Every structure is written in C-alpha cells, then in structure tokens.
Amino acid sequence: MGTKGVTQQNGSRDVKKYVIASLFGSALEWYDFFLYATAASLVLGRLFFPAGVDPLVGTMGAFAGFAVGFAARPLGGLIFGHIGDKVSRKTSLVLTLSIMGAATFLMGLLPTYGQVGIVAPILLILLRIVQGIAAGGEWGGGVLLISENSGAERRGLLSAFSQSGVSLGFVLSAGAFFLVQLLPEEQFLSWGWRIPFMLSLLIFVVGMYIRFRLPDNTDFKDSNEPKHSSVPVIEALKTHPKEILIGMGLRIAENGGSYLFLSFSIVYGVHVGVDQGILLIGCMLSMIMSFGTTLFFGHLSDKIGRRRVYTFGALMLIVLAFPFFTLIQSDSAPLILLAFFMANGLCHAAMIGAQPAFFHELFSAKIRYSAMSIAHEVAAVVAGGLAPLIATALLLKYDSSIPVSIYAIILACITLIALAFSRNLGQRRVQANGQGHESTPDKHFIVESEVK
Image 1 (tube, rainbow, N blue to C red):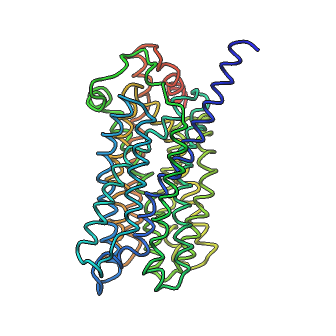
Image 2 (image 1 turned 180 degrees about the vertical axis):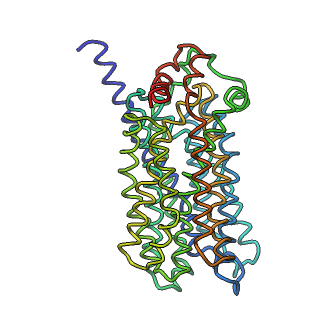
Image 3 (image 1 turned 90 degrees about the vertical axis):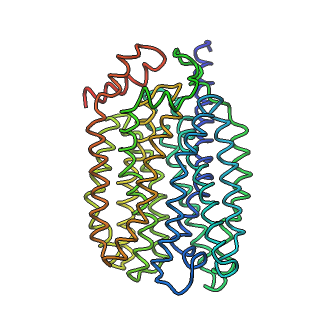
C-alpha cells in the first residue's frame, strides 16, 4: 500500500473519531442544557416561584430564567471561541463540558421557593446563566471538530452528526423527565424531578472520558493565513460583518421555531387539556426521527446546495405555523405525533442539517470558531431564548395560538431574507483572499451560489 493510501486510511479513522466524539459529546452536553427547558415546561414554575398564581405566570417565570440562560450564551461564545481559535478546539470543549456538568448537577440540589423563598429562583437563574455560558462555547467547537476534518464533498453529511447529537441530547432529557413524571405527583414534585439533574454527574464522567481521548484539531493551525489573530472576535467583526449578520439571520427561524415546537408546545398542550405524557412522547419520537432526517438533509445539502435545503426548512415553518397548534389541540395522539414529526423531523431538521456546513463555509479558518459562535449565540438570545417567553405571554393575553403562529411566520421571514442576502458570499471571499488553504470549502460554496 502506498503512502497516499495509508494517509487516506489514517485520515478516515481520524474523521470517524471526530464524528463519534462530536456526536456523543454534543448529546451529553445538550442533555444538560435541555433539562431546564423540559423542567421549565413541567415543574419549575410551580416549585421555584410563588404559589397561588396562574400556572402560566409561574411558567413565564421559569421561561424568563430560560431566556436569561440564552442571554449568557454570547459571552460563552466569546470566551470559548477565543480559546478555541487561540489554543485548541479540544481545550475549549473540555472546559464547556466541565462547566455545564457542574451547573446541571447543582440544579438538582437546589432548595425550592417553599423552603428558602426568593433565594430559590435567584440560585436557579444564576446556575442557568452558567449553563448558558457553557452552551455558548459548545456548538461551534462540536461542529468544527468534524467540518474542519472532512472534505467539502461530504462536509454537509458528516458535520450534520454534530446536530444529530443535539437531537439525541433532547431525547435523553425528555425521556428522563417522562420516566420520573410517572411517579405519583407528590413524589415527583418532592424529589423525582431532581433525578434527571443528578444523573448529569454520570454523564459528565462519560463525556470527559470521550473528549480527553480525542485527537486535537489542527485545521486552523495549518491555514496559509497568519496562524492567529491577536483577538479573533475583533478580527471576525472587522473582516466578516456581513457573514455574521447572515449567520444570525439563518438562526432566527431554526432556533426560534425549534423552541416553539418543543418547549412551548408542551405548555400549550397542557393549557388546552392534552396529557403531558403524550406531548413528551411526541417530542421524543419526533427528535428520534430528526436524528436520521438531519443526516439526510446534511447529505442533501452536499448534493443540491446549502441554501436550497435551508430555504425548504424555513418555508416549512410558514406552512406549519397554523396547522401545528391545531393538530396539538385536537387531543388525538396520531395527529399530535404527526404535528411533531413534521415540525421537528422535517422543518427543523432541514435547517439544522444544512447549518453546520453552511456556517463553516461563511468564515475564514483562523477566526471561524469565534465568528460562528458570535452569529450562532447572539441570534439564540433573540430567537430561542425569547421564543417560549413571548409565545407564553401571547397565549396568556389572547388565550389563542393564532398570535403565536403569526410570530412563527415572522421568524421564518427573517431567515428567508438572510438566505436571499447569503448568495455569492463565498465567491466574494475567495476572490478577496486568493486560493489558499480555504479554497476547497469556498469553491464548493461557489458551485452552490453560482449554479443553484
């Protein structure tokens, strides 16, 4: 076997290592992060906020903490993006998992409002902020582990594994809460809800084992450009301002829509009298389906282009905006499952399947972690962070899903505008920077923008 064959085999093995590490690492990290979202829908409003108020008001309080956690994500993106660009992707990801695991475990130990009063929600929100900081640095690093170690011809498919890990994390968190909510209500409210949070200690150990054994990523060190900018985030803002804005716009429908279809859908279903067990099963099964469809849409983006696949997902959000809540309100298990399958398995999966490679190809290697994190996490504040809060407030005021559906359509329109402005961005960047190390992914992006 020649040297080239050996190199290709070693490269293939390394890519598999990165795919496995990113998939399971993301699943474990996002299990921790999604626990709060699920708990906020089911129990946190009752335990950590004053009794005797409208249940929707307590839920809004829990979702306010949810939004605060999202507000902290850009800070995490800045901190860990800087570490990832200046030191290594691996170092950054080990730190994010450590911080996330500690914060989630401590949530399971918190006293409730009935035990310590106002101190309870304060401690809950502080830990949620810590979770948000960790989550802000996780996504970009998890994506780059794969995307920077795969060729352009398979980047969409392989990097979509990192997004499938996010889906798996949600399934694990929803599954854990589905099991503990089968306990008698008194036991569930007194100690059962704590079990999924306490399990994060075991998950932390497994995740750290995976990440410490991971080969470090060297793509950004091999660039023909200067190896490091002094402050990557500043250079990213100077050199890629339009790309960052485009990335933020791409996130609005994907992130905002996903939390309407996941967290808020449970609130809405319970509000209209649907059994929460059916809602949790719908979320779980649709996210299991999403694991496969995300990979399919990532592969499809390699064949027909990132923009086309992403546009399909954004248009699906418009199509589903009204029917989704109608199907939930039907209180029919098959129709509820259909709603979740279309929303999470098709609409959301199309966007997150194409998203990692799309984001990768927008930015230069030496500032990519920072730039991706800025775009991804700042948008998360105004999209996913506020979506359940805004939707619950609209439901509280109008007692109808119609304003929420209109809100979903607005989110989709913002992303469609971003997609319109994303055309030819890769082509202009290659022409400006020449044919260096970044030429391969950017050529792939040119094919999409010129031909498709």
